[in-house]
Amino acid sequence: MTKVTMTVNGKSVSGDVEGRTLLSSFLREDLRLTGTHIGCDTSQCGACVVHVNGEAVKSCAMFALEADGADVTTIEGQANADGSLNTIQQAFQDHHGLQCGFCTPGMVMSAAALLKDNPKPSEAEIREYLEGNICRCTGYHNIVKAIMAASGQDVSAIAAE
Amino acid sequence: MYAFDIERPASVADAVAALGTEDAQALGGGQTLIPTLKQRLAAPSRLVSLSGVTEMQGVASEAGNIRIGGATTHATVASQVGGTYPALADLAANIGDPAVRNRGTIGGSLANNDPAACYPAAALGSGATIITNKRQIAADDYFQGMFTTALEEGEIITAVSFPVPEKANYQKFVQPASRFALVGVFVAKYSDGVRVAVTGASNEGVHRWSAAEEALSGNFSADAIADLSVSADDLINDLHGSAEYRAHLVKVMTGRAVAAAM
Image 1: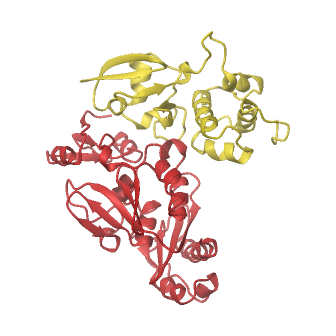
Image 2: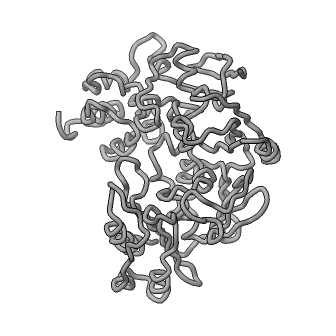
Image 3: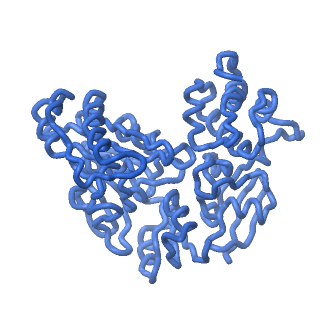
């Protein structure tokens, strides 16, 4: 076991991990931050997306040891300080950007990474950016709509309901 | 996953030393290796993560070449190389998905030499030099068949140097499930000739299409390859596409790359 220390959602945390401990496992099982979901465990589906030093990564395809010293943000760190939903989360609620909700943490984290780099993405850019996030309910239209709305853009032109 | 140890050296020298221990395996961005470990298709007892080796990260221009550190991510190449070598930046920007590009590295891709990966086509198509902790290897000598390279046990790709071409382009026909290339063609025009490298198509992995190189070196236009044909012999034949289909795609993608080269 090796001791790792990292900042998660603004708080310094540490724990003893094995070499094989994935960042997703450390977040869920050691820190009990179960908002980060493990869907496919093969780095295809994107339900486990978190930010490491500000960049979106699939936490099931990174070892906890590799995040030693890093600044990690998860879905639990997204709400406003008073506990209310942040702009992206609120837009997902307003536009029904989720059905079963399993992919939602990864979708919200990917959306946050996209809007940080590209504050006013086009519909095509949003769809392309979400290539690595799979919604098994196939509810993509409203997810795209929510991200358009969160970026302050008109959503009336987005394809289907 | 089965149990193993991970080391995170901070220098190439320490990484080489760590890889000298028995059954050790280098870990780049892990976007291929970690899923491989989960499936136990590989089972090293010790991983040596290269993500903390800062001297292997970053991009530098030098006298007509661009040098990319072996541990540089696809996202960094996509964002930093566009001004110098736009075709290479575009290729990096279309590997996998955004989260994968934030972890996956050029050195990892070239060391793995997946027969459908994008970077091998860029390296071979550019006549790049693979720089390791021991030596410099010309791309023509480096790629030795599917998942096989000239790298020796414990040898690390510390950087890759690409001669910047006059014009180049990469066209990828995406296999939609994996996002790897069903067929990808990298075309680069240099003052002394044209290079054409094909990925995704052959059982031998990335390779050059010499007939197209010859035709395009005389006349750099899609018309120049109109009369050429690609043999389906020894091309990959699987549920995603027959060998004949891939042979057809090689020519189509080459033509598109020439037309789009800038």
